[in-house]
Amino acid sequence: MISVLLIGKGNVATHLYNAFLKADTIDVTQISSRNLTIVPNADITIIAVSDDAIAEVSSKINNNFVVHTSGACAITELNNKNRKGVFYMLQTFSKGKKVDFKKVPFCLEATNKKDLQLLEKLAKSIGQNVYHINSEQRKALHVSAVFVNNFSNHMYKIGNDICKDHNVPFKILEPLIKETVLKIETLSPEEAQTGPAIRNDKKTIENHLELLNKKQQKIYKTLTKSIQNGN
Image 1 (cartoon, rainbow, N blue to C red):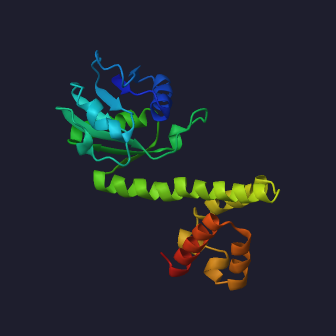
Image 2: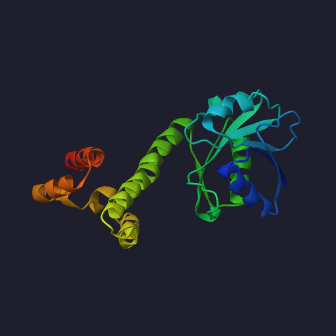
Image 3: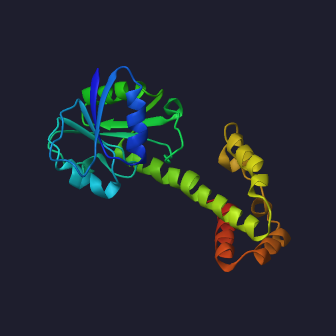
């Protein structure tokens, strides 16, 4: 049995807590980051708070092994005096949306081999996909994730805005979105690229720009140029 103390009450902490509750090999306790006057001991203390709060929260914890869940922060962001690690899950977490941890990549880091093995055992109690990723690699992964998740979702938002402005159901685009995602399972993103930019279809590009507002035009031009330049 692995004892886990989970500090935080946000989306990541809530999803993790619910997953650990269902694992027979995990004894989990959850507390708020605002209530650190009494911190229970645990084999692993997981800080699941905002990136800006990691240093401050960790400095108040004396437990033997403390990890954070951030993709953007290095292991050195932890200010606890004892052993350190990272328990990063590369996934988007939203309230009310269940997460299948069996499909979630766990990116782990620790300051010694024994702690890394302990984190791997913890990850495999709720998931399957485990990777040993250092701080520099994790930073690159996190930036990549922003592009493929946050930025692409913003493109969906813009697409939805355009549909609304012209009384077109956004739902019509859903099969296209799903097919785009499925294609990169068999093709590289570069091979899967289609559309007027890659074809250099100038007339279509001009027609699109005429339809868009100034902010949308700026984004459209930037992305079109990036696609055509191959970067």
